[in-house]
Amino acid sequence: MASIQKINGKWRYRVSYKDENGKYRTKTKGGFRTKKECEIAAAELERKLHRGFDVSAGDQLFPEYMRKWFELYKKGKYSLGHERNIELSVRLVEKYFAGVRMKDITRDMYQAFINKISKEYTLATVRKRHTYIRECLKLAREDQIIFRDPTFDVVISGEKPAKEESEKFLNYDDVKKLIQETKKGLDPRYVSRYIILFAIATGARFGEIAGLTWDCVDFDEKTITFNKAWDYKGKKFKETKTYESKRTITIDDETLKMLKEIQMIQKQRRLQSGMGEKFNPNNLVFTDMTGKVVSNEAVNKVLKKLCQRVGITTITCHGLRHTHGSILLYRGVNIKYISRRLGHKDIITTLQIYSHVLDELEQKEARQIDDMMNDLYFA
Image 1 (cartoon, rainbow, N blue to C red):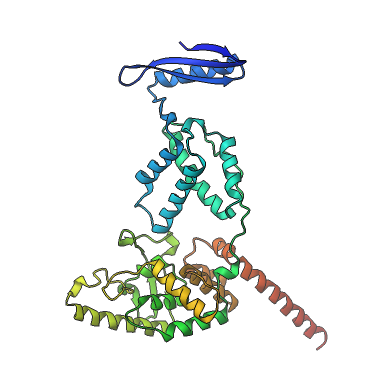
Image 2 (image 1 turned 90 degrees about the vertical axis):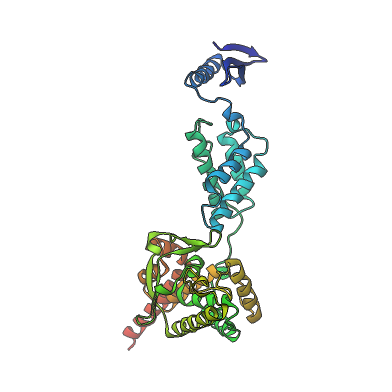
């Protein structure tokens, strides 16, 4: 039976129970405004004890719980980029919820946390961090460590401006400069330059490029099939980002010629190494001198130097994917085809990513219509 007391104008309960080792314990909680609220809370605790719940689970610290959740359920099971985003969310919790117990997290507390980080990050980043934290707390609720969702109906915002579109895309003239500079230094010893040219020509994701195998290159039909990706950390193949990412696209003659050169170089390296099939055992298209996959970071490092050398905006390998899509749009390619070529989940994704390009094209087409009508009236 719970003991109910009024102390300094507030009500408090104390419940005695035996733990799993048969030792007597007490749980005390105060601060209730009315006796009725206190009695209801005490009755709920007694009900949980009767059903065998570990009522002390909520005493563990939130940062420790989320770190354990990450290590047990997430670490080593996703791509490097995905895993890093999850761990950054864990670090935020460790920074802002230090010393906070699971049972003490409230909606007000969580909203205050969101409001605080909103001043430091973009809206997209805040949403991403919130998504992983909410997933962790959802598991805690499922395990009945907490009994209410502190993230429920929280308002997400972000005040830091996102990167300018010009930082994510290169225009047509700048791409030409980059291609010329990249081709100047093509060397079989450095595969990063080949990957950069391939990314410009196909708009493929880095994982798709790294996981491309020779059986997916059709020299006769002039096509490339993306049906898997490469997990750099796990050093193995993995599924593409979405089902729609599995696709076959056409490639130009120049890219086809480059692939033939790479294939010939690989055969020479295999013979020189004396390793036979052990050289590049996964039959990958893009490997270094030893037959191993290069990292995204290594390619981005080379790309940064090339961009700086020709005096254009510095972007990443993923930025080349967006550059490919934006150039196709500017050249009048059907957006439905672009969506399929890039392997987007649906055309809505394509419209959202390239909305700035579409806005510019809309203005240009509006002027073209005005010119056409003037020709009709004053012909």
